[in-house]
Amino acid sequence: MNLKLKVCLIGATGVGKTSLAERYLHSVFSDVYRTTVGVKIETIEVVRGSRVVQLVIWDISGEDEFQRVPSSYVVGSAGYLLVLDGTRRGTVDMGLTLMRRVRESAGNIPFVAFVNKQDLEASWEVQPDDLRPIADCAFAVVHGSACTGAGVHEAFDLLADAVLERYAPREGALWT
Image (cartoon, rainbow, N blue to C red; front, top):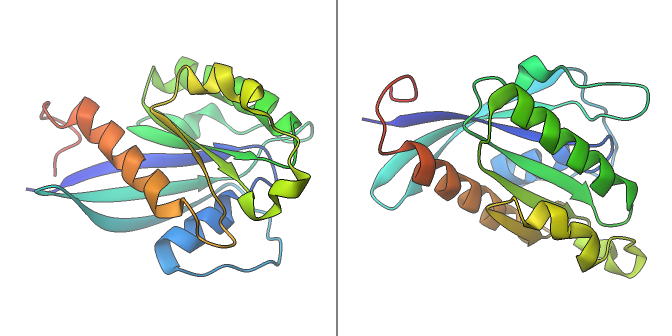
């Protein structure tokens, strides 16, 4: 029996959610910026220990001062990847706001924080202390790069592990 789990990629506009998904799902990276409108949904099958898990990945459009992500997108999620941009300190503040909104909409579901753009680390504005409030709640914090692929599979593997740790013992709507 396979486990099918909805996981979301959330974060501020321009943090690299789509690039992260494309790197993970298709092993590609494009430096052409493409704004996600609404949500893009793709599925991938992963093996975690003796389990086969089908991750239904919802790449949700970014949020900024002009656009608010509908909270209905995260309802029914088993977990999420909170994507931050290491070169923009403001994405941490937006991440904290999104964490609160996810908790209100979907409950206290597990998440992994991914601090993206490690390939531009010389330009980073985000400091370890900035991440402490997120790290205190996250299953893990991974620094990496959608551009180089560093940390991408690790982040998704940790997310799958966090979700399985919480949901695998329980049968019900998540089992297919």
